[in-house]
Image (cartoon, rainbow, N blue to C red):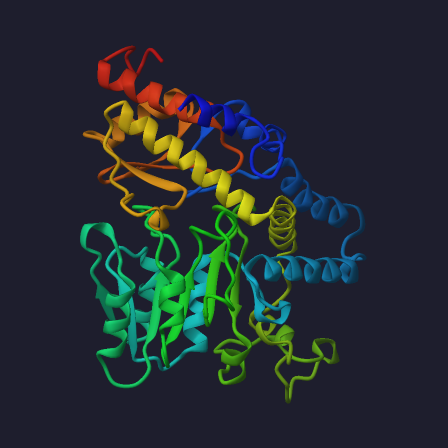
Length: 395
């Protein structure tokens, strides 16, 4: 492990200076922050993108409206490039839920949905709310097989909607997205990318994804109140949005109230009302930074740290519950067993180690701003808890 640790500390990954990138995140000065799967921290650069908008608004009201609109379109282009889409296929949202509901709106009338029993509720509840039959494919041993998903989609009449998460929120299982997309046939493929956008490469065209939604406050590192939805051009051409507003039309400032023509630039017609500029600018800046670093490099860094994490935990006698039998199933988040999850997470928090509590224990996530010292602090605090070291109150 010494060689791997040294590599993680140095400028590994195409000569990138990970220590300098880590320094962009103030949270790393005080916390071993292993909670990007719950809520990622923002960098100084992303925080400044949002703060700049509020300064401009404070100093000049809306005199920079046209400038803000142009900045929004730059953000749209950067987010689109991050997932391999065209800018007119991307709309801004405020979270995953709003994005998934926009997708359900676009596919109104879908009767059959195939999902997974490991899914986060937002992947299934909007479909159930609209009256769709949702079939939950089981993931034996925590592993979801593409052939089971495809068989379930083909088991009924007509076209089904396959709706899955790219990475499962609890176990960290990476879904075989490429295999599902390549073999989906007539069925539609919807992806919840909230646990992958910003840390794993996404190419919606290559993956044959018809629609995708993600939040900005997790791995995108853009803060709460930001998110996006992708609707393929083919899907947009044959669907109609359920909601519309004065900003959804071709010429909103014509102020016509007796007729309308929906915007031809596709997904943006879903952006009802005035934009949430601060969230959009933060998301755009986060996407731009990820593109500068390179998503492949980010993935490599995050997965290397995750391997270091799981190996260190296992060596110390802690049980990792995430499926690690096949490397292709690994993501950058890990589920760890704890006999008393609440006590374990409380102990970690007192040692300034941030993780997410789960019924089985806790979830730890490694992003590019983490390093091996974060892992060491996690394992050390767990060993202290197990060995009955300092009391929780004594910290």
